[in-house]
Image (cartoon, rainbow, N blue to C red; front, side, top):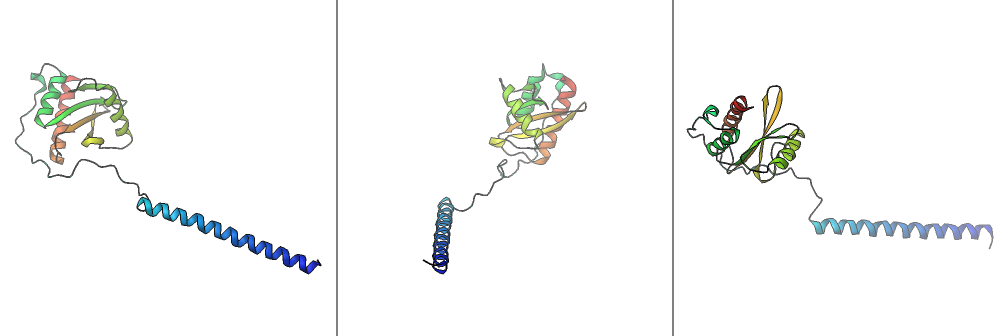
Length: 170
């Protein structure tokens, strides 16, 4: 075999290697395409669902909450929950410490939702609404579980009732 024959042999060998490599890459890409089609397209990150956009509750005539006439903070929170048809209402400091709740054993809930609020979340799973109430230079996180979607007017009124409760009890 002379030098021209050796060069031709290596060129043919390189061509075969390039074709086999290209075919392997195409086979691999086809497998990826099949997997994507089977999954229904590329995964697009979804925003977490907030409360269901049902018809907002209209603002009925609401009974005024008078914290001074209540026996303690929990009783006042219970009255607020009843007024706004809340399943539960919990108040926590921004660092996660429980201030008060209508539900016993809410320490973990207070810590978890305070952390979510500090990360910018305003809704939790299951329709939980997170409220930030400024009180004495600190943020108190209100964790409300409404039985139905609350309008922005009701949310503002709820925040005001919580603020008045804090002024009386904390």
